[in-house]
Amino acid sequence: MNIEKQQKWDQRYRQQADQDTSACAVLQQYQHLLPSQGRALDLACGLGGNALLLAEKGLDAEAWDISSVGLGQLNKIAEARQLSIACQLRDVEQQPPEQSLFDVICVSYFLHRESCQQLVSALKPNGLLFYQTFNVDNKNGPSNPKFVLARNELLSLFADLEVISYLENDRSQLNGQSWLVARRR
Ligand SMILES: C[S@@+](CC[C@H](N)C(=O)[O-])C[C@H]1O[C@@H](n2cnc3c(N)ncnc32)[C@H](O)[C@@H]1O
Image (cartoon, rainbow, N blue to C red; front, side, top):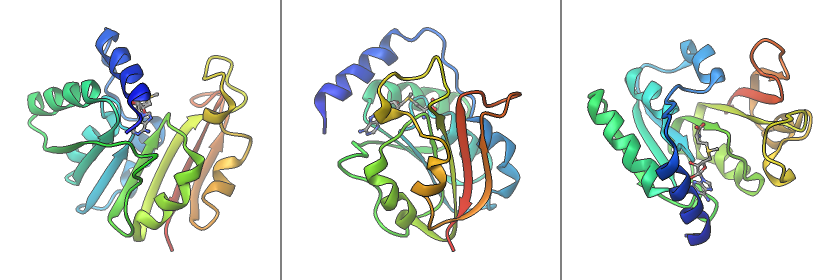
């Protein structure tokens, strides 16, 4: 576990006044593709907006994050909404998901290029990936290029998957962000 990173995010979630728990736009827009049952992961979930939607849709939702404070808040929100979400404190860079576990994986506003191939392998055949995060055209996103996508980069990071939707810098809903919906063959 990267303790420094954990403390940074714990601190952020302690200070965060507004608790936005909406799912990312790509998951909201393509939720009709979700299977009616199965195992679904919100990776680097934060307050778990994606996990909440996945659980509402009847999936066995799991939410993994390095911040115990964020996960604690998600637990409370899920309990209040009577939703069951399996929260796991986990450094997903050091411990990405194992092979062929998930029917759905959703990642928003988190990027760790080195483990993208493991995300592909963690999908079951026909499993779906929903990915949305900042790209180089974002003026307000992270300044560290490590956390920012190049143009079309999601397409190359997940080249082994079958693309269902790819969008970049859509002016109405996605300025400075990219999204991908893709399926494991
Ligand atoms: C910008 S937030 C995004 C949270 C959420 N996905 C969302 O869309 O609101 C980035 C999240 O990644 C988590 N994170 C950063 N590094 C991580 C790691 N190595 N393992 C697991 N989670 C990590 C942070 O704790 C934080 O919750």
